[in-house]
Length: 167
Image (cartoon, rainbow, N blue to C red):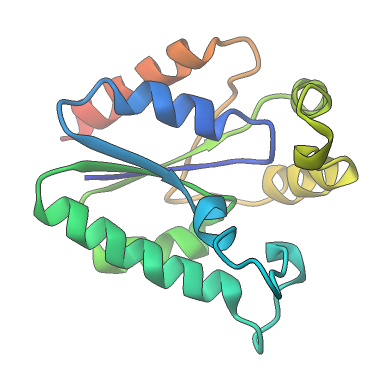
């Protein structure tokens, strides 16, 4: 099983993913940001990536390979990234059991969370840009969760109950 958590920076993807991972007997939780951060010299932020650079495509290809390897050993894989339905479709083409959730707290909530991060991790204005991009899209694959008033444990439990019910 592959569970994808998406949302703007500060939505709680990493924290919820960590809580969710411990609800399964065998699980792996990772962020595509971690894979992209392996590039030290010449690293391009995902929103500045070009077809020529294709660092985001490379990170996604590596993630797909990792998911295949962990799923082959019966791990539930939890992956976080900022993606939409089209990009989730790349995973649904490769895997039969994919669940995708958009964590979308109110803008002021994610802005407050972003301000609480260390300065090198703050996204600033990028938070609102990504929030507006995500909130104005239509979703057919991804399930939207407004986690504004939920603790990370509550959001993780909600996702767990949805994926267990669907299986």
